[in-house]
Image (cartoon, rainbow over all chains, first blue to last red; front, side, top):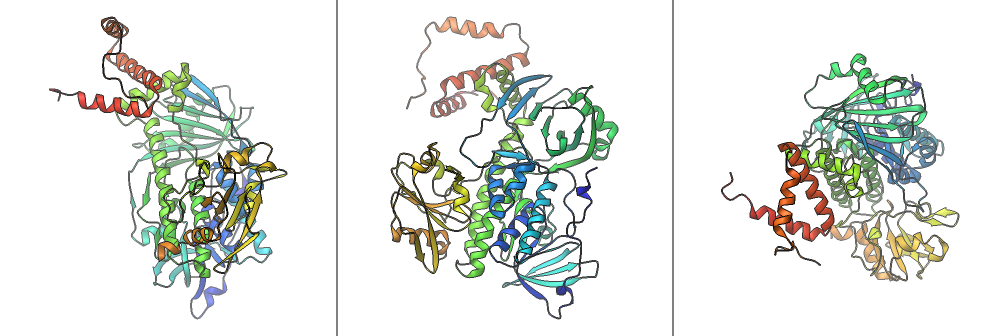
Length: 540
Length: 69
């Protein structure tokens, strides 16, 4: 048994806040020490914003849970200072097999694009991700970053007081009251805070159950993703097999809605199913079994005054496509810099409304993709089943049908098309993938890579274009990152940032999304675009 | 951009029609439904052009159903 589940990482200790005569006020409090809560807290603390994270637990989450972390998440983790341990521990895979009924219909190789520092995705148990996040919290604490992690702190109530939030928190030493300028609710799919505030989820609701098992295989098994449609061992449903670190294999068996959860979880029920799936000769032991229920929907608004929801508390998707934790980290990445600038007075408070606009756009994209996957995997009508089966039958013989096979469209970062923070595209011939609103794709630069050069501040990226080394705008200093297409012999930089243009100037946001781009530097245009990217135009 | 062809375009219409019926001969309803679905997907891929496909979907949608509940 893996001991990582049992070690208290942030055991309860009494905080001076609990004895304070009047409630202590913190700039930011985060509820929930999962990947999203810890992610946004580290982001804020690294920018010097004091942040307190509270959680009623004190350990990593039990069982593998989120297991597939996409490139964008690793790139965000790089900025948070924990990308390297993730990649070192994680399993990289590119090969997959698709099964239909009792046969393999095809296999594939993802052939990821070259010229990126990080792989397209890694498989890693959520508890490792959380473990590395906590380790990173300890590391930046020792360097003096203002971040505090309080275990055994259960939030009983939250009240938005207009200019701050008041929290009642229960602890082993009894309750205490504390205040925050802003509260970030990362308290998961069943978010107690969402419930306390009487806010509901809206949208299309799917209801389904998955049996999730972490299995330790005795023998070698290939590092491939196997997906079954309608297999004999799980008729009418789907199944997924994925490799994780430590020789642990993750198995997801779809069970449908109307099932007896307790019955399905029993080893005498689970083991014969897995034997059918893996073959009688494969020796394995069960590490963890759980039944997972999902619904596919989101809150109407993620920001409610001074309380902001992020991750599963704000939106839930089906597990197909690994869009849960990955989208939650994009929430954290979107919110961190905005909150910092609002707290500093660099940006108007309405900048936070653009978190709502951009991440609702992201959530809708994720919900659309995962709904389509769900419709393919579990056809909702006789006709859709006929087409689904036709696609799978054809995919065995003809390559053309394979793009229709939908066992989950793996998470790619959202392009914030139409965001109020974007300026109109002014780079004729520029590549579509780096248009305003798009996340910056990585590119090789001699010994390093582009994204590590961009960092986590507003930046002016020039490719074969002149510009001052620094630009002062409204008390902010923009640093120029000067590149030439000739620095990258592979041509990836030119292909991703110039396209048909001879030169380019990009204004890049702290979350490494493109805010604006031009052919050449123009001080007024940059100032206007920066003001817009700080939400000042929307506020005016 | 090409347009959806809705004027006669198959030389030997009767022969093609007979071939279409022939592939369904002896099939159950379920087998025929599955064959039709495969055929639609094969033809759709051959067309490829999303505008033409959209026009075909619309043409099929508006021309069906008279007297059909």
